[in-house]
Length: 401
Image 1 (cartoon, helix red, strand yellow):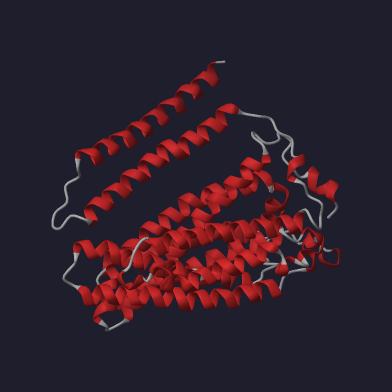
Image 2 (cartoon, rainbow, N blue to C red):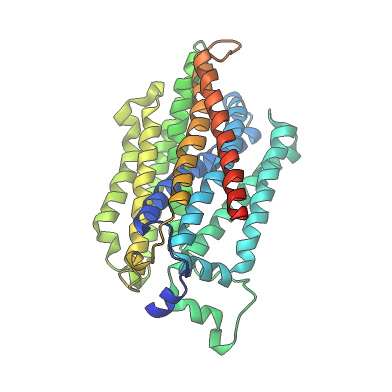
């Protein structure tokens, strides 16, 4: 696929802001999305293990992990919208072609994700504390479907990076293939790498849970120590597994990414994975703490940057696709609306949720929100009301012009 054709596939309306803005937001929101995905997958796997286990500690862990999973899957879906939109904005020639080539899978992704969501809630409502065999298997189905949904996204992303093969996929041997039913490209090492990262990220999450629960359950030291030990094992074992999968990913890169495995970016990726492995020793985390999860989140941000550097290496280095040449038609309203929505509506809502969880964790027995937290909740509600009001105001303003 020549560069002129790729540029012709761009949106004729241009971008509402500079491409660098969307690129930074893409990396940041994708990292946040993946943190939620990793906690979702890890907590679901732990809840599933506990549901089938006869060990008292595992069965006790099932409920909290299921609570975590159902919140994490919601966050993963909501936050995941942002990087998906940013990809469509600056990499639209690649993303839309990939979706058309595997259209049935792109549509099936929504159905699969919904089914996984419903299956998880079936177990939550029917068998949260262990439940019947049917409810336990519904959780297994949920985890399996979440992995399938992840694979579809992985395949669509991989196909978008191979424009030189698009025509061969669309018209093999001169015959048009318009069904959109095929998966044409995937890198198993890459897919497993981002799945396996759920282990160390969830391990770091467990260390934070251990510290959090220590305030509410100070007398149950054996259970809390067991949680910390499990978190440390997941960090170490998961970190080594991620290192192996990363090597497999780099070994299977196409020729268009030649040299990337020994680049600065790849060295940074390896160093960040090694950091996950040494977190237990670095933080002396037998008693838990929040530092390991903050560090793990930082590692995911580094890996998100490395992932974007690889995409740039392939699309710019091999195919000559330059983001800086995208036409910009500055739209101050849409830029301001996004920033205020992200920081105002989202910021207040998240701050309110975190504040409640933080205070509740330090309060034995029944929790009553403090006046400060109540005021924060009022700000969150006010921000939402203002956002809805301006939406209709500017909408009617545009209609009447």
